[in-house]
Image (cartoon, rainbow, N blue to C red; front, top):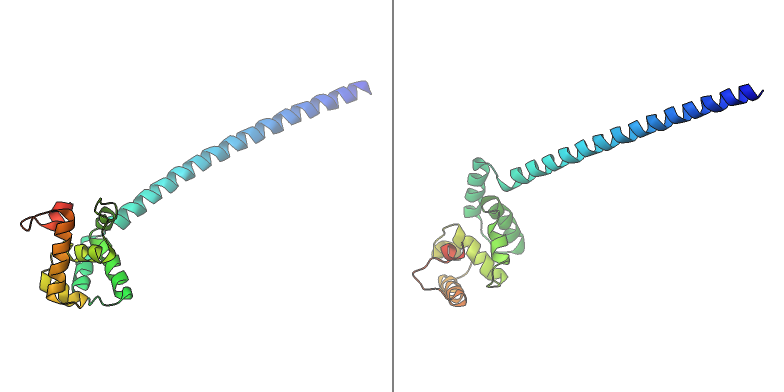
Length: 158
Protein backbone atom coordinates (compact mmCIF):
# COMPACT_ATOMS: atom_id res chain seq x y z
CA UNK A 1 0.00 0.00 0.00
CA UNK A 2 2.84 2.34 0.88
CA UNK A 3 4.41 1.70 -2.53
CA UNK A 4 1.15 2.56 -4.29
CA UNK A 5 0.79 5.78 -2.27
CA UNK A 6 4.40 6.63 -2.95
CA UNK A 7 3.97 5.98 -6.70
CA UNK A 8 0.72 8.04 -6.75
CA UNK A 9 2.50 10.84 -4.88
CA UNK A 10 5.37 10.82 -7.38
CA UNK A 11 2.95 10.73 -10.34
CA UNK A 12 1.04 13.65 -8.78
CA UNK A 13 4.27 15.60 -8.35
CA UNK A 14 5.34 14.90 -11.93
CA UNK A 15 1.91 15.85 -13.29
CA UNK A 16 1.89 18.96 -11.11
CA UNK A 17 5.33 19.94 -12.38
CA UNK A 18 4.26 19.29 -15.99
CA UNK A 19 1.09 21.39 -15.52
CA UNK A 20 3.13 24.20 -13.90
CA UNK A 21 5.60 24.17 -16.82
CA UNK A 22 2.72 24.14 -19.31
CA UNK A 23 1.03 27.10 -17.58
CA UNK A 24 4.33 28.98 -17.44
CA UNK A 25 4.82 28.33 -21.16
CA UNK A 26 1.26 29.51 -21.93
CA UNK A 27 1.76 32.66 -19.84
CA UNK A 28 4.98 33.47 -21.67
CA UNK A 29 3.28 32.85 -25.00
CA UNK A 30 0.42 35.19 -24.05
CA UNK A 31 2.89 37.88 -22.95
CA UNK A 32 4.69 37.67 -26.30
CA UNK A 33 1.41 37.85 -28.20
CA UNK A 34 0.37 40.85 -26.09
CA UNK A 35 3.68 42.57 -26.81
CA UNK A 36 3.27 41.96 -30.55
CA UNK A 37 -0.30 43.30 -30.43
CA UNK A 38 0.84 46.44 -28.60
CA UNK A 39 3.54 47.04 -31.22
CA UNK A 40 1.00 46.58 -34.01
CA UNK A 41 -1.37 48.96 -32.22
CA UNK A 42 1.37 51.61 -32.03
CA UNK A 43 2.14 51.15 -35.73
CA UNK A 44 -1.53 51.57 -36.59
CA UNK A 45 -1.73 54.71 -34.42
CA UNK A 46 1.32 56.13 -36.19
CA UNK A 47 -0.16 55.38 -39.61
CA UNK A 48 -3.50 56.96 -38.66
CA UNK A 49 -1.71 60.03 -37.35
CA UNK A 50 0.27 60.32 -40.58
CA UNK A 51 -2.86 59.91 -42.69
CA UNK A 52 -4.79 62.42 -40.61
CA UNK A 53 -2.06 65.05 -40.60
CA UNK A 54 -0.90 64.56 -44.19
CA UNK A 55 -3.97 64.64 -46.37
CA UNK A 56 -3.54 63.92 -50.04
CA UNK A 57 -3.05 66.74 -52.51
CA UNK A 58 -6.51 66.12 -53.95
CA UNK A 59 -8.10 66.53 -50.51
CA UNK A 60 -6.12 69.71 -49.90
CA UNK A 61 -7.11 71.22 -53.26
CA UNK A 62 -10.75 70.30 -52.73
CA UNK A 63 -10.71 71.75 -49.21
CA UNK A 64 -9.20 75.03 -50.43
CA UNK A 65 -11.78 75.33 -53.21
CA UNK A 66 -14.59 74.69 -50.73
CA UNK A 67 -13.15 77.22 -48.28
CA UNK A 68 -12.99 79.94 -50.91
CA UNK A 69 -16.68 79.39 -51.75
CA UNK A 70 -17.86 79.66 -48.15
CA UNK A 71 -19.71 82.56 -46.62
CA UNK A 72 -18.77 82.53 -42.97
CA UNK A 73 -21.58 84.19 -41.07
CA UNK A 74 -22.64 81.84 -38.25
CA UNK A 75 -20.84 79.50 -35.86
CA UNK A 76 -21.68 76.40 -37.91
CA UNK A 77 -20.02 78.03 -40.92
CA UNK A 78 -16.90 78.68 -38.83
CA UNK A 79 -16.81 75.09 -37.63
CA UNK A 80 -17.03 73.83 -41.21
CA UNK A 81 -14.39 76.35 -42.27
CA UNK A 82 -12.06 75.36 -39.43
CA UNK A 83 -12.34 71.65 -40.27
CA UNK A 84 -11.42 72.27 -43.90
CA UNK A 85 -8.70 74.73 -42.93
CA UNK A 86 -7.08 72.16 -40.64
CA UNK A 87 -6.82 69.82 -43.63
CA UNK A 88 -4.72 72.43 -45.38
CA UNK A 89 -2.69 73.68 -42.42
CA UNK A 90 -2.88 71.13 -39.59
CA UNK A 91 -0.53 72.91 -37.15
CA UNK A 92 -1.47 76.53 -37.78
CA UNK A 93 -4.25 76.78 -35.18
CA UNK A 94 -2.04 75.13 -32.61
CA UNK A 95 0.65 77.69 -33.38
CA UNK A 96 -1.82 80.52 -32.81
CA UNK A 97 -3.11 78.99 -29.59
CA UNK A 98 0.36 78.51 -28.12
CA UNK A 99 1.56 81.92 -29.29
CA UNK A 100 2.75 84.48 -26.75
CA UNK A 101 0.29 87.01 -28.17
CA UNK A 102 -2.91 85.37 -26.81
CA UNK A 103 -5.11 85.97 -29.84
CA UNK A 104 -8.85 86.38 -29.51
CA UNK A 105 -11.23 84.15 -31.43
CA UNK A 106 -11.85 86.82 -34.08
CA UNK A 107 -8.12 87.49 -34.46
CA UNK A 108 -7.50 83.77 -34.99
CA UNK A 109 -10.22 83.74 -37.63
CA UNK A 110 -8.68 86.71 -39.39
CA UNK A 111 -5.24 85.10 -39.31
CA UNK A 112 -6.66 81.86 -40.69
CA UNK A 113 -8.19 83.76 -43.60
CA UNK A 114 -4.96 85.69 -44.09
CA UNK A 115 -3.06 82.37 -44.17
CA UNK A 116 -5.12 81.46 -47.24
CA UNK A 117 -3.55 84.48 -49.00
CA UNK A 118 -6.90 86.22 -49.30
CA UNK A 119 -7.06 89.90 -50.02
CA UNK A 120 -8.74 92.27 -47.59
CA UNK A 121 -11.82 92.64 -49.81
CA UNK A 122 -12.17 88.86 -50.10
CA UNK A 123 -11.95 88.46 -46.32
CA UNK A 124 -14.57 91.16 -45.78
CA UNK A 125 -16.86 89.50 -48.32
CA UNK A 126 -16.46 86.01 -46.81
CA UNK A 127 -17.05 87.17 -43.24
CA UNK A 128 -19.80 89.64 -44.05
CA UNK A 129 -18.12 92.72 -42.59
CA UNK A 130 -16.95 95.98 -44.09
CA UNK A 131 -13.59 96.45 -45.74
CA UNK A 132 -12.69 99.00 -43.04
CA UNK A 133 -13.41 96.47 -40.27
CA UNK A 134 -10.90 94.08 -41.76
CA UNK A 135 -8.33 96.87 -42.05
CA UNK A 136 -8.89 97.79 -38.39
CA UNK A 137 -8.46 94.18 -37.31
CA UNK A 138 -5.23 94.01 -39.27
CA UNK A 139 -4.06 97.28 -37.74
CA UNK A 140 -4.83 96.09 -34.20
CA UNK A 141 -2.99 92.82 -34.81
CA UNK A 142 0.08 94.64 -36.08
CA UNK A 143 -0.02 96.88 -33.04
CA UNK A 144 -0.46 93.91 -30.69
CA UNK A 145 2.49 92.08 -32.25
CA UNK A 146 4.52 95.29 -32.60
CA UNK A 147 5.34 94.80 -36.28
CA UNK A 148 5.63 97.26 -39.13
CA UNK A 149 3.26 97.48 -42.14
CA UNK A 150 5.98 96.19 -44.42
CA UNK A 151 6.18 92.84 -42.60
CA UNK A 152 3.65 90.17 -43.52
CA UNK A 153 1.75 89.04 -40.41
CA UNK A 154 1.68 85.37 -41.40
CA UNK A 155 5.39 85.25 -42.22
CA UNK A 156 6.11 86.94 -38.90
CA UNK A 157 4.09 84.31 -37.01
CA UNK A 158 5.73 81.44 -38.81
